[in-house]
Image 1 (cartoon, helix red, strand yellow):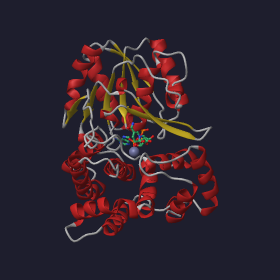
Image 2: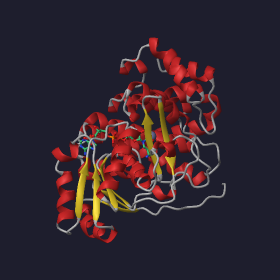
Image 3: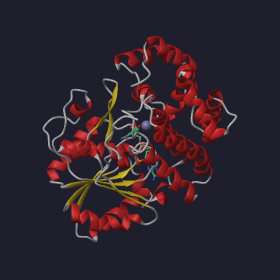
Image 4: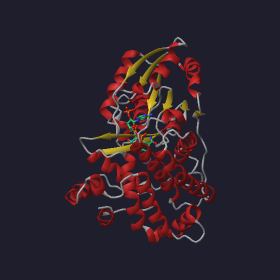
Length: 381
Ligand code: NZQ
Ligand code: ZN
């Protein structure tokens, strides 16, 4: 086990009705909130109204910034920074899924600088010195951004999708009411489950030895296999929604990383290329790339794959059984397993290859070069 620092400053309220805490806590945080939302689901399902009612009844001022798209782009975050500056916001409230929250994180740091937020993502080592406090009302179980220090945005024109992290980006408070995820459609519910599993795999397959983190990870996968189909088949099953929501937070809030330098995240980097080229939802891209990655690196991950198979499937299972079970699971929850399932034909392989190379896609532990990209593309064709 390697040295590590455990640090997570996010206060997280979980369960039915937790939003009632928002108004009083926001009043202790600031006076003027810029509320950031996506394309409108939180208006139609009534969640935004609950948020604004709670601010109104605590005499707080607020203004709405709307329109964040799934696979969010830095240009809109820059526009939200301008809106926050003009308004004089002293806190940001994100109401939505990962795309909204990641944009809000960029805004929190962006209001203190004069350059585009993209500078933080561009890999130049530019770090914020300050950030506005962020309150999060999560509406979709997937990314873990509600309790971590990461944000992912894309520069669509130049075909880069990049993550970046800083301690100032942890949300101050996050509100997770499983009932708020009832209206997430079955497809995005499934992409969220696929993302949660992918975060767990990325950390689990890190080659740094950390037995407790690995034991947590295999249990997360086991519970994901149990509750995943339940949330798809019955979107209003509270226990299933609650379990998937908490698993999603745990998968990327540092709990599975103790004793490891990092996760691998090679599959995530590969998927970001699919997102930026084809605007495919993040979790859908991951369920295409992961089986191919496991098959391609099977010799190197053999022992860990066996342990994962035995925990999830039973004592007599071996690693290849897990890959088969994972593909069956994706079928069950209806996420794509091949590029062709998403209408991406072989004629696009050259473009994907070129963009993988331009972005120097690789994992922290499992290097990938041109030959690996080609072999994986064949496996996911
Ligand atoms: O735009 P709205 O109207 O809000 O609709 C959204 C969107 O269409 C909808 N939705 C969200 N909550 C809903 C709902 N519809 C009905 N009822 C609700 N309660 O769902 C769609 C997808 O939303 P989005 O926020 O894009 O999904 P997700 O939470 O999966 O976020 C994906 C983004 O997060 C990044 C991904 O790359 C992607 O850009 N990630 C962020 C990470 C992080 N910050 O730690 C880590 C992840 O690996 C990931 O990369
Ligand atoms: Zn992810």
